[in-house]
Length: 374
Image 1 (tube, one colour):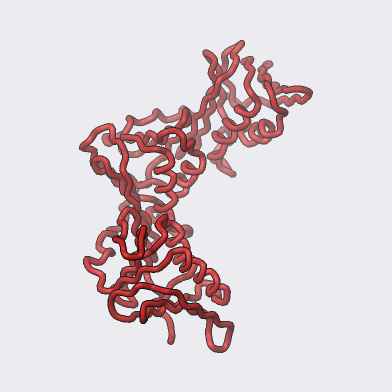
Image 2: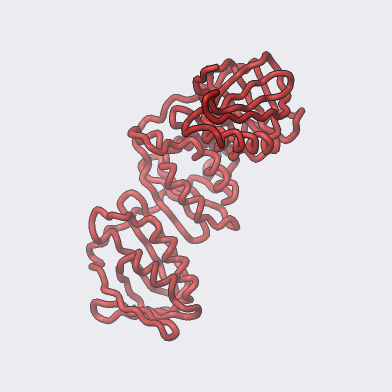
């Protein structure tokens, strides 16, 4: 192999591809990155049997070829190379990387030992990258962080015609977001369970000027792909039954409260300063206001009152402040509507554009109240 590439493009491509390389690969070869040069294109790929990443950039290819080298080391070197053109050239069992007055020589890994990457499944549909990225941020709010049940670390993606609904839950809360997309088949109807951390990783690396094409084979429902701006990722889907969560939404909520979202988040942040870890914040709704409080009589205490448009009887509820803020932060609209049944039943949070308007159901956040002592 003998190629010439732009150092910035090379560093970016290597960093993107090597991000999925595990800290402790199951076999040494999985620590490698595969470089394939031909017809003016340099392709870079990584694979750990569960996830794959593929990228390609333009290159001046004098001699086509394929090599495998240590991925993280190559990423560190690529990031440190000087600006301008760099040359990659193999010589027996090594590859030399040189640019300006810098030169590195890396040992090649056995190419034949590198596993074959999975084929991309058929296109399922596409959505603009910005919408997809924002939807992932909303849907992954309730993904379990420490949980033995692997299904709770996933996001259920339900595809129904031109609508996609993404849902996550960690048993204490639930996040659901719905967005429109362009399906490859207008009558598509299928469901997948995707690792939430993988979705977050996909969202962080999206080029928001391009669409995201999602791939899935309903006849072989084990793999999903995400293609964006020449970059493609695949992931093995989670095998398991996602909890039946639809029943958690109440048919009717007798108590509604509408609050300025920014004011509420700010008040929670201040009051939570005196709350010990996992201690609840209490919210007392009465007379078109909500009083937030935290702390105990023999320790530090904090209280703050803000306006709230209340419809229904007075109620007191308490929440984990971190869970409360995370759900509120995922809402885009300036106002939040809290819909309640009683102090023990899960509360639904929705955004709305105006104080006297209707709530949006594009994003629904359920949070189970905590028990508290008066």
